[in-house]
Image (cartoon, rainbow, N blue to C red; front, side):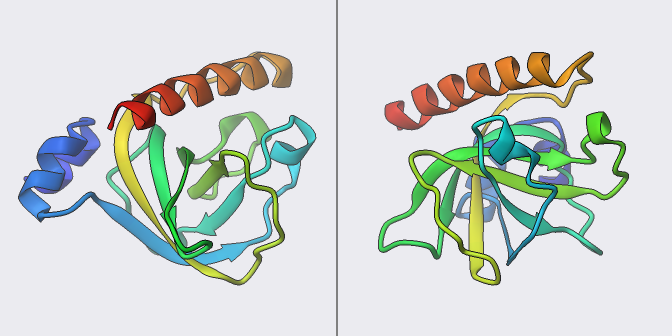
Length: 143
């Protein structure tokens, strides 16, 4: 039941059943470095064997890099625009740009911003990422 709620974007209902927000933990690994080129550096977690029910863009909190959780926008999916079939978790942490490779973090998923989508260009994707960041910031400011 919880996996179904997560898959369908009902994160608050899943959190109620779990007794806490759904989260994924892992080590930060090197990515393709393209987010940095677009002005949205990310921390990347390789989901290897994990079959997450999530897919899309989410407002998140990241634990393990500072005394308090850091807020950001997270992506769970296979990044179709860069033709990489690997399922990943990438998080752009707001107002944060430090080298943290190898650190262990826990990413809490608080709200679905939107489903995954295809883009015709990297510029179109960067514009959408900026809108996603705005939406995630607005949600996080309200909670």
